Image (cartoon, rainbow over the protein chains, first blue to last red):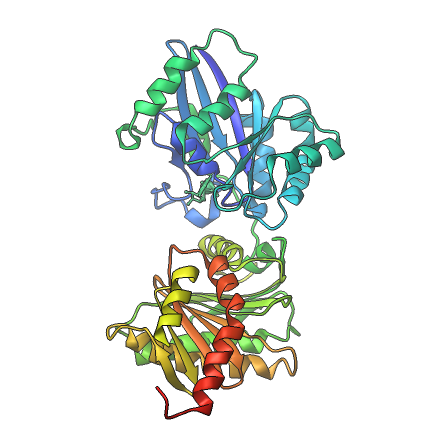
Length: 328
Length: 122
Ligand SMILES: Nc1nc2c(ncn2[C@@H]2O[C@H](COP(=O)(O)OP(=O)(O)O)[C@@H](O)[C@H]2O)c(=O)[nH]1
Ligand SMILES: [Mg+2]
C-alpha cells in the first residue's frame, strides 16, 4: 500500500476543515468536537482543532489529509505535526482567506513559520473565499510571490467544492505517476458526504487522539498572541475581572459595565435569547467588544483594521478553549 | 419614510430598521413581533453609548452592536439624539451592512432633520 500525505495550513476560517471534508472518503476527524472520552479533560489535551481525512487513490494507494490547528496558541502542534505525523508529506498547501484584511501578511507569516518544511516539499497556495471578496486578484498574488522570489502555483478555489479541492490535490501530487485522477474525481463527485464513515481504527486517528499536555496558557495570554488584539480582559459569571492583559486598560471598566448590562437585560427579559456580544466601533478607531457566555465573558480591545467578523471568530475560538481557571 | 428604510434594508441585507430621535422611533419597519427587540435595544444602545462616552471625551464611538442569539442589532449614532437601529440576520454580511448604512448617513440625517422641523407633516 503506497501512502501519500498532504498538509493543509492557514489562518482560522481559511477553509482547512472544509477542504479536507469536501474530498475525504471518511467522515473528517475533527478533533475539535469528537473527543468524547470524559477522562480526557478536553480543554487540556492537544486534540485541538486538527483535521484528518483520507482519500483512496486506487486499489493500493491512499492519500492522508491533515489540517493543522489554526490558532497560534497551538503552534507547538505545528512543529509536532511537521516533525512527526506529516514529516513525510508530499506537499504543503497554504490556504489563504481572501476576505482577510492583509492576505499577503498571512503568506509571509506562514512562509516564515514553515520555511524549512516548504523548502523540501511541494508548496501550493490556495486562495479561498474569493467569491466573497475578489481582490487581491490572481495577478496581485503572482506579483506578491515574485517580489518574494517564491515559485509556487496559486490556485483560486472554493473550499466547499470537491472539484476545486481536487485541483489542489492533483497539483500537489503532480509528480506522481500511475494515479487515475479521472476515476478519483468521478468518485469524489459522486460520493455524498453523509455516506462517509469514520474509520476509528486508522493509526492516524490514534495519533490525533493521543493525549498530550498542552502548555498551560491563560485565555488572556492566548488572546495577546493573536495579531490585532491590543488588550484582553476575562470576567467571571459575576462580571468580576479574573485576568487582564493590563490593569490600567482604560476600557476595563467599560467591559465590566457592558457585561453587567447584558446580565441586566437577560434578567429583565428572560424569554429572549442569550446576549452573546456587545461591541463598539467607529472608523479608524480601535474596537471594543465583549463576548458573553453563561459562565464567563471576554473583553477585547482590537485594532481598527480587524473586522467585526474577525474579532468574533477569534473570541469564539478563545472562549472555546478557555480553561477558565486561575493561572498556576 | 419607511420606503426609504425598506430600500436601505434591501441594500444592507438587514431585516428591519428604525430611525429614532430623542428616544422615539419616527420611522420603523419592525414588525409587531419584533417590536420588543427595537424597544429593548434602543434602551440598551443609549446606555452603551453613555458608558462608552465616559472613557472617551472626543472622537466618540458611533456604532454599537448587540447580539441576541441569532439576531444582531446594529445601532449607528448619527447625532447625539439620533439613532439608526437595524436588525441583521446571523448569516448576513456584517461588513457589507456597515458599509451600506454608513454610505446612507447623509440621507438618514436629512430625513431626521426634516422630521424634526415639520413635526406635523407625516
Ligand atoms: N464563501 C465561501 N466560504 C468558504 C470557502 N471556503 C470555506 N468557506 C467557509 O468558511 C468557513 C470556515 O471554514 P473552515 O473550514 O471551518 O476553516 P478552518 O478554520 O480553516 O478549518 C466555513 O463556514 C466554510 O463553509 C469559500 O471558498 N467560499
Ligand atoms: Mg477547522
